[in-house]
Image (cartoon, rainbow, N blue to C red; front, side, top):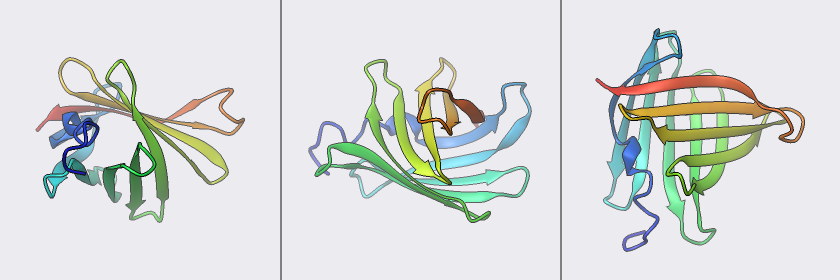
Length: 137
C-alpha cells in the first residue's frame, strides 16, 4: 500500500473519539489507530450499552477500493467496500442479513459524522440504523 495515493484517504477518522447521537446523548467511545504506516486503520468501538466491536480498514489496490471488515460482541459481521466521494466523504456498502448496508463517514466541522443506513428494497429507500457524531475525547 505504500506509495498509493488512495492509501491515506481515510486518515481523517484517526483519533480517540467520544461518540454522540443526534440528540446529544453519549453513545460510546471509538479508537481509530493507523497500522503499519500503510494507511490501514484499526477500529475499537465500545458502546455505552455494552457492545464492543472491531474493524480493519484498508485500501485494496487490486480491486481499487476501500474495504472494511467489522465484527462485534453481538455476533454481527459486515464486509463493506467503497471509496472516497468527491465531497470528501468515505462511503462503503455491503450486504448483511439480506439487506444492503451503507456507511458514510464525513467531516462535519468539529469532528466526523458516521451515518449507517440499511435498505431492504435494493436501495430505493434507506433507513438510518446508526448516526454517530465523533468528537475528540
